[in-house]
Each structure stands twice: as C-alpha cells, then as structure tokens.
Length: 186
Image 1 (cartoon, rainbow, N blue to C red):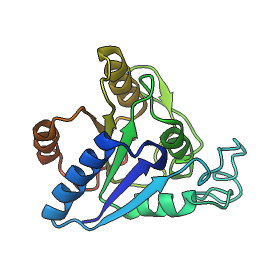
Image 2 (image 1 turned 90 degrees about the vertical axis):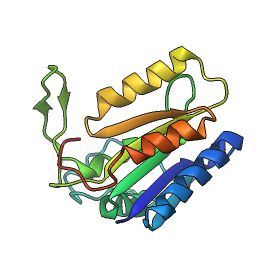
Image 3 (image 1 turned 180 degrees about the vertical axis):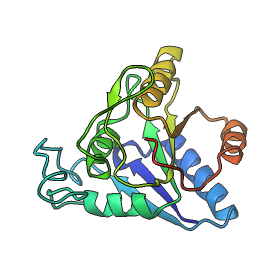
Image 4 (image 1 turned 120 degrees about the vertical axis):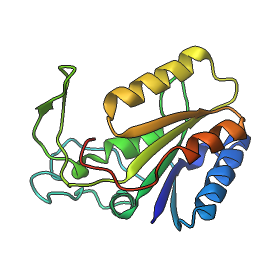
C-alpha cells in the first residue's frame, strides 16, 4: 500500500506541522510508504482550459510542470491525503490549482448524478481513496461548514475532516478510513 500527501508550501504553520506529523506517523505505523508533494505558488501553471489533456495527450496535461509527477503519484497511490488550509471556507489557491489540474484523470464527457447535477465520468476503473483534511487557526463554523459542503458536493468518493488541534479526533477518524483503492466513483 502506498500513500501520497499533497500540501501547500505557503501554509506551513504550527497547525500544519502538527497535522502533517500526526498523519505521517499514522501512515508509517500502518506500514504505508509515503510520497509527498508540497506545492508552492510557482510550481504549477494554471489550467489553460485547452482540453489538450483530453484531445492531444489523453490522460496527460500538455503543460510541462510538476503536475505530471503529482498525477502519477496520485494514480499509483492507494490513499491520497490533501492537507488543505481553509481560506474563507475554501481550499488555498495552490491546493485549488492542483485540484483543477487533476482533470486529465477524468473523461471529457458528462454524466448526470442522482441529485441532477453533472460531472465528468472516470477515466480509470479504480482511484486512490481521497482524504481532504482542512486546517486553520480559529476557523468559524461557517468556514468549516462551507469547506465540508463544497468538498462533498464536488467529489463522491472523498472523506473530509477538519483539524483544529484535536489530535485524538483526527487519529480516530483516520482509523475509520480504509486506506485502499476505491472504484471509479469520483
């Protein structure tokens, strides 16, 4: 089993350090080797919306930057953990950019979900389980609620947690998540 941690280099504060150490230690105790990427603002270009990842190089972004390695690490992992600073109830800009650039991993078609919304179908038959852990100092209930709501609405196969310094709660939640590949529901 392989784990992959993605974090934002710009938000390496005390909460991040505690959360990172806790998650890394937990995964190591479970015998999972960990690949890690810390994204800085100059590491990734923004998606051009050119559809090159669907038309010119299916499954690969045409932009030559760190995202190619991030997507490879993502696909080969069994569990991908995003350590996401919560900024005004949203992901930070660097994490959002990485999530936007994830598009080569899906197909260019649309499908209708049970709630009537649309999304792109999966390119692959299995994906790693995804865990988004939002963190921040003194997050308001509105910020945490918005982060949880938006993340859950945009991905069907993701677990979402909020970390505000309670190590026990995060450790307990991690123990309930089976770190293995999941089906093609995104």
